Image (cartoon, rainbow, N blue to C red; front, side):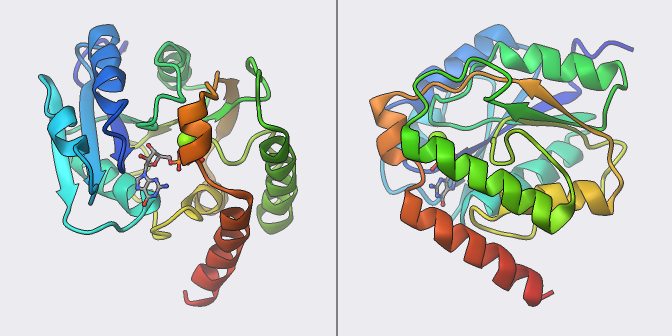
Length: 230
Ligand SMILES: Nc1nc2c(ncn2[C@@H]2O[C@H](COP(=O)(O)OP(=O)(O)O)[C@@H](O)[C@H]2O)c(=O)[nH]1
Ligand SMILES: [Mg+2]
């Protein structure tokens, strides 16, 4: 059965993106008028919430900043409550291309996988900052080392999940270590995964706002500490 209607939820974690969020949501709404746009504001301290209040958007709010992982989990839970069969995770900072979603959903509909992971290295990997490129190489070795799963891009925010089949899919790492945690979940739940190309736009805005080299070391620490506490 083709999902041309309300069974797809696009979960968009939002934190201090007042400059770009309106444009991102308008484009998504225009391209996918029948998909649910679920925005989770993560305690933004700018005008993001006001900018995200547009037609066709479900807006949820964390009263304080909990982190991207927590925002995604809140959105996934809500998508389940709305009865979504598939959940797409999509960044709010304008780095992702809405056009990529079509192939991701088609892959789930054709039952080629239970989760589709975006890879910027299979797509047009233009203008990736030098340090970011090497950092991503290190993180795929790290992911392989901790999970045994080899990916070309283990830290990509664009994904599509068959949540109807895997309602137990749950992110517990509140902050950025959730990306590595998702790969562990794939392994634990024995989900069939596939990587598909996606284009990441590196604008000056997104590079400045994105994760720094220093923060990436924190993310690895967070992942290990989070696992030890379980
Ligand atoms: N940095 C950060 N982003 C968050 C947070 N909560 C939600 N987000 C959203 O998560 C997405 C990805 O964040 P970003 O810093 O660009 O990560 P990167 O693209 O991996 O460098 C954006 O849509 C943010 O608005 C948070 O606590 N910190
Ligand atoms: Mg970003």
